[in-house]
Length: 417
Image (cartoon, rainbow, N blue to C red; front, side):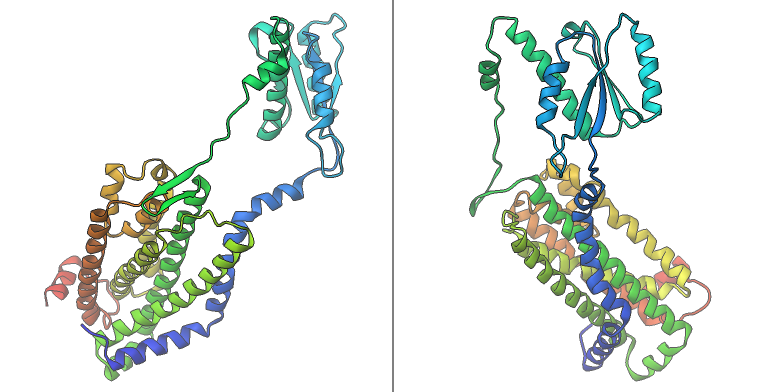
């Protein structure tokens, strides 16, 4: 199995024909645009949804110690973009009414949207430390957290002052500590954190998923079209099945390389534009190696799948199974970052179909032992050779097969032939 002159011609033809298509040009620019949108979209959406009107909050303070301090605190922060306070507290008088009657009245006001929220502070809050937040929307985690911390701080400060202590002094003594995260490796130290490490891994995982699915489906679809249109018979008359197979793989790989280089250039510009220089790039070259080897492994698998499929529906069904397998590392990525050298993860790294993705998760966090890297690369390379050899055996016969899908016994005969 070698790359002949005819295989190179097939590769160039595949590359030129695909690179001129509108779908390729659209995906070339659309994919990084989508990823940037996914990264920056939530923040942009939050800014666009930010209201310019202050929210009225009804506060029933049965203890009589919270409202004044809370009102003064909320007048200072948080504020809206126009400088107005985000929350305007409104005191609800006791008037000797039972708490149940006050709740009923305030619930009616909430349904009429007279208030955005209601905070009920019982008289025994100093002992129970329990207050109640009532609203039609209890999913505003940020707002609820702000109010909860302010009320808690006021109650705690009141108890400290009445215990004969200075609240400001206690606050200084209880000041939190900011912890810098510094990644230590054989090359030295570098300040980095979870977001940088996971972000780099996530980018490689998504790129791998997009590249394999788009290029693999393109490869399978072209084979199905050529089989159904009988074009493959003309191609086989001009070159051998092996030249055609390797030409297709190389041509699609060149297409993928152009996409990766273009997206990498955009990524480098973004890194310097938003000053993300804390990214753990020490093992970036290893991640690129795993990316390339993983792509060639899946390219051989897609070639074999393309020989089995006779229709677009069959091709989509077969590639769908691979799609589910590719999602596994993305699902366990967050868990894997917490313990990258866990024996289970090390074992998963040695499974060739997910070796590249697992290394994408582990390498930005910590450099695995040399023997693990060598063994995983060796398994991956051997798997590529085996898969390519099997794909070549299947391709030689299956590329001309149309109609009924071959059974396992027939496929086994092709491989042994």
